[in-house]
Image 1 (cartoon, rainbow, N blue to C red):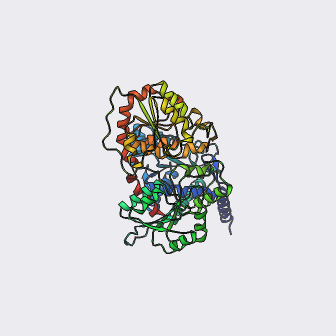
Image 2 (tube, helix red, strand yellow):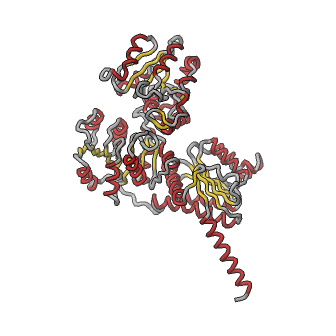
Length: 578
C-alpha cells in the first residue's frame, strides 16, 4: 500500500469517527427542556402525524446544502408522510422576494402570506446564524406556527433555542452537520411510515363503518358524538359498564338513539364482547378518576385488531390535587399505551412537556363543540335596555373554596349591582333539590334587583334561555394565574382545560367575558368569537354596554365553526389514521 492510499484511508476513518462522535453528542430539547434521543424522535413523529391528521402544512427552509435537504424533505414528507408540505425554494419566488425586499426576507415574506395557525416550520441551518432563517422563525411565531430547528457549529447560535423542538450538532464541519440533519428528518418520516404504512396502491374495499363506544363515565359528550356518528351513517355499538346500578338520564337518551346498546355486567363480560367485535375502532370514555379498566384492557389484549382509543373526560395528572398515586399511574399507563388518545382539553401537550408523558401513538384534541348551530331567531335588544350577564354551569362556592379564584359570586354580584348590570345565574345542580350550598345566593336573589339565581334549565331550552342576555361570563379574580394551588385546581387546569360553557354561550350568540381557561380563550378568539379575557377587576361595564350588538354580530358570524358537525370529519380522519 502506498503512502497516499494509506493517508486516504486514515482520513476516511477520521471523518467517519467524527461523524459517529457528532451523532452521539447531538443535543435534543423541547422548549429548552432536554430530551433523550428516543423521546425527541417519538415526540416529533407524533407531532408530524398530528399535523397530518389535522390537515396542517409543514414548511422546510434552508440555504445552500440545507436548501437541498429542505427540498428533499418537502417531497419526502409529501409522498411518504402523506401530508401537506409547501416548497419555499421556488427560484422565481426566491429571486422575486430577494430583489424586491432582500435576501434576508425570502422566507419570512412567504410565511407571512401562506402560513396558518397550527402549521409547522422546519428551519435548517448548519451555522444557526442565517438572518433569513431567524426572520422566518419570527414570522412563523407571529402566525402561531410551531417550529423545529436543526442547527450546528456553536451552541450559542441564533436559532438553537428558538424552536418548540431544537436539535443541535456540536460540530463545525458542514458535511457532517448536513448529513446528520438529513438523517434526523429521514428518521421522522420513516417513523411516520411505520405508523401509517407505505405508499402502496390501495385495494378499494367497502369502508368499515362500525364504531364501538365503551362508556364508563356517561356524559352529554358521549351522547352528542354518538348522535353525530349515527347521522353520518355509522353503526355505533355502545358497551355500558354499569359501575353504578342506576342509569343516568343521558343513558336513557342513548337507549332511544338508534345505537346498539350492550350492558356488560363486569369487565370479563366486556372482554368477551371486545374479542368478537368487528368494529374498526373502539373509543373508551374512561370513568373519571379511574383508569383501571383501560389498563386491564391494554394489558390483557396486547394484539388488538380494532384500534383502541382512550379518553378521560377530565385529566387528573397535574390538574387536580389529592388523587392517589396509583390512580395517576393508571391514567398515565392508559394514555401512553393506547393506540390513540382523544383529549377534550388542551392538556396533551402539557403532559408531554411538563409531566414527561411519552405517547407511543397519536393524540388528538377534540373539544366538546355544539351539536347544532344554536338559536335561529334572536331577540332584538333595545338601546335603553339594561346590560345583562349570564352564567350557566357548575358553581364553586366561597364557603367551600375560600381562596379559589373562580369562587367569587359575591364579588361579581356586588360589581354588577354597583354598575346597574343584571347578573343571571343558572347552576347545573338544581337549587330546588339541594338548597344548602346555594343558600346565600338564593337569599341575595330575593333582596337584590340585580342578582338573579335561577333554577336549572333543561339542555333542550338552554340556548334559547341564554339568548335573552347580552354576555356569557366565566368570572375569576386577578390571582387566577398566580396561585399554583387554586382551590380544587392546580394552575395548569386554568390554562389547559376546557369548558362546555363557552360553546353554549356561542350557540346562544353571546360574546364571552372570561379570563380562563387560557388556551380555550385563545382558541375561541383565534376562530372569530368575541372573547374579552377580563378578570373581575378589569371588567369595563361601559364598554360592554356600548359594544354589545357589535360583539354579538361578531360571535354569530363565527358560530358555525364551533359546531360538532364542523369537526366530526377530523375525528373520523384521526380514527382512520391509527
